[in-house]
Image (tube, rainbow, N blue to C red):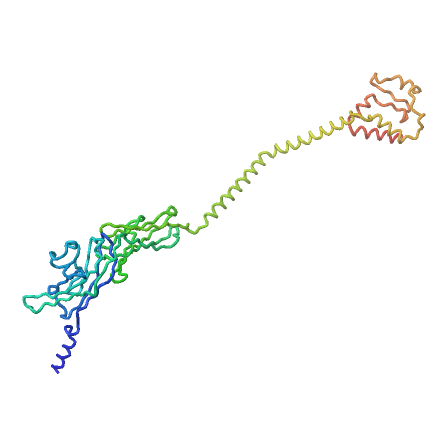
Length: 385
């Protein structure tokens, strides 16, 4: 039974089952003058070993002696010396490489190599293995990637509004710094995540309260990469006024108030000038009456038959006496003839008849007085008839 257990343990031992293997990202974007991080992991048949027993090397694929990284800094080629380092622990099978101050000729491909070092207690043969089939190649970027802004089309006044700025990168050891032209640093929240192996994204979430003055203003997000290359993206903020009825209520109240004030003003003016208006109306009536009497006098003084002729015409129309029977003043009694108009008095006969009754000297002037005298003449005429 003991032999059987040892056999099973030997078969399942990592030394027997594991092999030389590396997992390296094949293609990455590298921003010139910035940095890049190459994720890398590996396995070997010797099982778990301390970092002190392992040597990690990065070299060009065309020449495994052209080191871009080595523990011995003197063995690194001059163009990469001081610009590369391992970020992971080899004892944890992590061979992640960082390259800073990227040059436009650092395109690769670059491969990883593992070596098992001898110690004073283990003088066994040193194992070495280069993973030439798992190498990384860079796409050089001369301009930094632009941030991407995600936001609602319209902001509502006095309501929280959120804008998200995000940018991808390949250097998580020196993440880009996102800043805003609006608000303060404590108003933004940053999130960093890995989108896919070798590609990371940093997000900045800005939340603020837009006001009416913020309408049609610019909101800009700037991404500052390692060693200061920058890029930015700008959006125009459209602020919608908060829903209220002030634009309806205020004009309505103003219109009603104006109408009320105008009505009160008119009433006060009518009361103030009511007496004056009544006086003017009475004065206008009296003037009209005077004008009417003047017009009748003008008509009576104008051309045409006089009142005397009109009376004679009316008399001749209704009289039944022959024309020869006219009043003869020569045969009038002396008491009638003795008085003349010059005396200012007219005496009547003792028994006067309607025909023989003389008229007053003021007959023509009386006719000018108007309709009242004409009515008297008509009564006299009818009396004579």
